[in-house]
Image 1 (cartoon, rainbow, N blue to C red):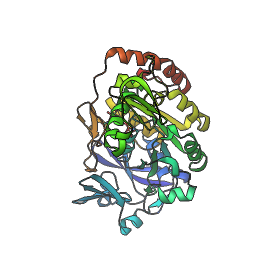
Image 2 (image 1 turned 30 degrees about the horizontal axis):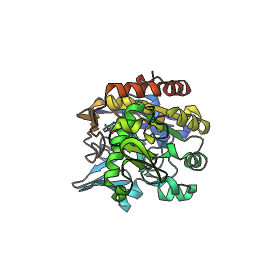
Image 3 (image 1 turned 60 degrees about the vertical axis):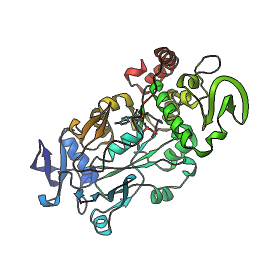
Image 4 (image 1 turned 90 degrees about the vertical axis):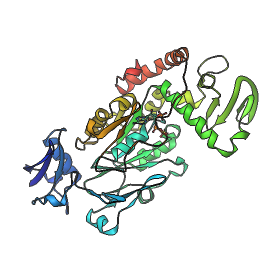
Length: 391
Ligand SMILES: Nc1ncnc2c1ncn2[C@@H]1O[C@H](COP(=O)(O)OS(=O)(=O)O)[C@@H](OP(=O)(O)O)[C@H]1O
């Protein structure tokens, strides 16, 4: 079957006629996702594309074929993005656009499955800017996630047009093996893809420490948890060398990072969430018992900080969508890159990410690195990935 395509290359549109397989046949009102993917295979990953069937009406397309910029809100695919005092909110587009875009809901084609403080949220947000991806994030407790397929789709699945894929980021799965099992067995198909993003566990621990401190300060009754010179754990209290310790959702948080991560004998405290969540091998091992290796992408969160466009390019190939992100889509703020897209003025740095960290002595860092090294090496051979921090 032949279709016409507008290829967006080097800032100009080029008309091409392409032979497509039956599977990639364009759907009513636009071109199907398999078609976009097939086109992308035809032309390698270096080209951004907008495609149409049989006729070429450029006025119908902006750069990425689905965004229409309006003064205060942005219509993008099946959603309307609004900037308010609390940031950007997203709601369903109006009925006319909705029908025109043929929006519907189905199970997400891809899931982001953690780990906490490794960059999942930034990754989810960035992928949502891709013209063929709509992502949703679920930040609440996962306890009520034992929904059947229809319930999940109706409540949480992102609305997608035929040329978009849905992606879902569920935080906290590392601590909820039963929810992960439920997701794999009941909320995905054999073709569903999974993404795991990981950073150096020492950096993760520090980031989590800062996060917990801030959360603790904003938790109203935290005063009842705090005990001077006492450790409160499972309701019992015992004398410790800590000067201020708190039990906070599986964490022990003291007044300094160092006092939090080491136990009374000076060893990394494996029961403390700060350390426990950095034992990635255990989680990856559990994940790979449920998900085939070729359906799992393991991302280096460190590289994601320094070269997000490269990591996103790998992710695009894994998700089988066209290559979209380039360094031009980012601006640097401090040591982090934030998205900057003309078509998506709603996108930017994420509030509460890239927080300032307390100084930690190199001795403490080395001690933790030595502790994590054997776990990192086991992870390296398990997933067959070689990230700098794993050595
Ligand atoms: N571009 C950009 N901007 C800001 N932060 C970035 C970015 N890329 C990756 N990171 C890293 O993401 C860390 C937060 O991770 P998560 O989004 O997974 O946190 S959370 O678990 O959802 O709370 C965040 O941790 P903190 O620096 O402690 O905030 C960063 O290490």
